[in-house]
Length: 247
Image 1 (cartoon, rainbow, N blue to C red):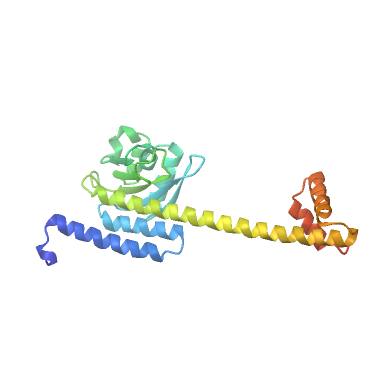
Image 2: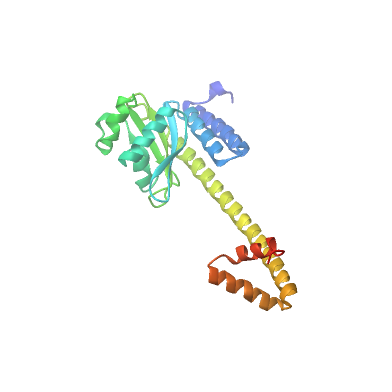
């Protein structure tokens, strides 16, 4: 069947599949988490052309937010205003149960954003849509994918499913990035533990040779000095190995 023979719905689904296929390839080639998130917001403009700007907001452990990716400086400024006011699409979406979705077709008159909304209108932004990251998880969520339009009601008829799937991609990127960071930390901790073990072994060997004592006695000396000086055992061992000619 040719593209001309497709129904409107199937044509939209085809375009949807093409965009997400391209996004999957782009995400696979991204070298870092931030780079992948930048590609997601770019895909957001392609998938929801009614949106003039797209951003991703993330919630820190202390409850504050940051903008991790955006297609326009104005979106970042509007996000910052949300964080200051504790009000706006990303804040509301991150707090809502279910899909965690917030939509407003007229920000200047929406009582849910009575402070942020008029400020957005002053910047020319009239409507917004936000989808919380990790749908169906208990709020507060880790953030939201935000869409902004300069036209009142422009986002009313957009494909919310596409927005939700895109938010799912963003959540998956964040999860993978967090796992990679955790693995890197674990590897570094392991390497540090091995380095410390070697240092302590060298320090014990020096004490054993100098004092004519056994391994347990040498370790007891290192531990006693560490406790007395309130300094890590590995640092005491480093001092012994680095300055053994002076001791």
